[in-house]
Amino acid sequence: MLFSLLLLAVFTSCSNDDDVLNPNPEPPVGEESKLEGSLAEDRTLDPSVEYQLTGYYSVAEGATLTIPAGTIINTATGTDVFIAVQQGGKIDIQGTADAPVRMKPSGEGVWGGLILLGRAETTAGADAKAEVNDLIYGGSDSEDNSGSINYLIIENSGAQISADSQYNGLSLYAVGSGTTIENVALLNGEDDGVEFFGGSVSASNIYVENLQDDAIDWTEGWNGTLSNTYVKHTRNDFSTALEADGNDVQPTITNFTAVSETGGTALQFKANSGAIITGLSLSGYDTSIELADKDQGDFANIQIEGIDSNPNKAYETEATVDVAIFSWVQ
Image (cartoon, rainbow, N blue to C red; front, side, top):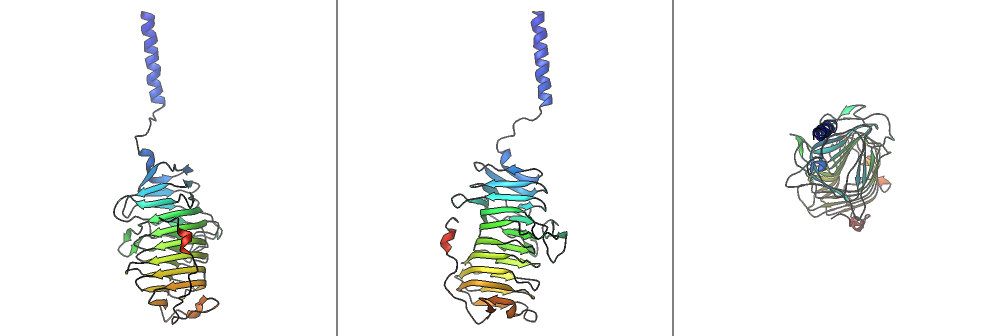
């Protein structure tokens, strides 16, 4: 009997030691679905889990966040709810036409959207500070790679940053040409859809519907290419289908179709900005092209089909982008 009691004591002692040496119990139910804080190492999400973005989620330098096809990220709403891919970090969104990745609020309200921060050139200079949390962007690597985005839907972005500033759906700060951006839809936001802050990244197959501000916006010397874009306006308080701001640069815009049911301004150019545009189709706008700063701008900087743009021309040609290619947006 004494021998048996001694064995029991030893067993119990070992069991307690194991508990001390392995203090990592299973996480509570649902904990693995929470996205917030900093990601310091590679992580692949599970498309069978509905994730909850509850605050600021940062992909740090050296880490890659992989988001497989069909993944849904439900977001909280408010100023501090957004995803930021820092300089040297990457995002790999692997959506498909049958199973796009979706980011949307779980209730009423708006959130901060997706932000990529690269090391390409910007007129703001190297190590510039974004209006969001003083995040750092800018450098000298035009081929910088922030990852890949394919078949992504962003809904109801545009939370307030300050009294004069809001988040965009997809913000691209000095993102380089090594980054791939294809098949992105931005729906029902309260600020811009896609905004380029310098950089040399290109984007294709972009669908924007019912954003309050500009569907597409660029500033700080962005010099990439935007191709196959479809913009739809049915609300009457939007700003523009395209706004260009800043330096005397001419990014390339190919096959840009915009449709408005409420009039408004289609293309607006500020300061000395310009563009080289082919395949422009506008429908339903009161103003086709506008120079916001008439003492600075020049319609000759805006080349459409190889000639100077003309504000007296409606550009109501046949649609150059078939909306059917965005049938995956639902």
